[in-house]
Length: 150
Image (cartoon, rainbow, N blue to C red; front, side, top):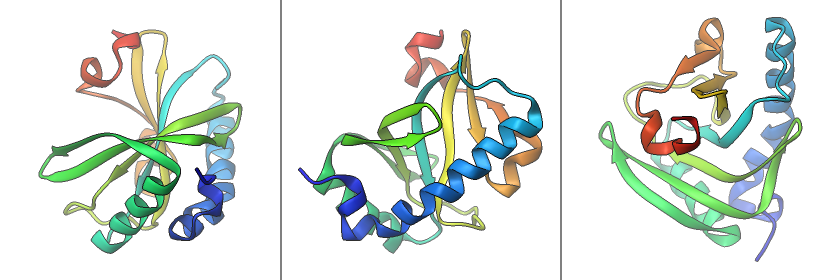
């Protein structure tokens, strides 16, 4: 199977990874957060067009396997397990969350957040402008997706 960086349908998110990594690093530094002890589960994308989500899905199907597809809050959300990881800081993510767009519009299509655990507390670490004031947010459905944190 191909590496996700080499898939045409994923060229935009491959190009977007340095922006996300830099924003993530800057936010962690500004917050004085030590990220090394955090146990990260997966990385997530955001898009505001169904066509983008469908294109990314076609791309991930070429370099990984679909782990799950569920309807959450009225929209599909897929989890893919990649054969080659997405690298951010010291983490190697093999699981990518791909949500279809909902009513909310995001200012940027691309990498959006990392879901992680701090001790037994599951958190979303988001670098999007709309979430920066609340960079860490509790996950209400944590027990369903983070058995290691509960």
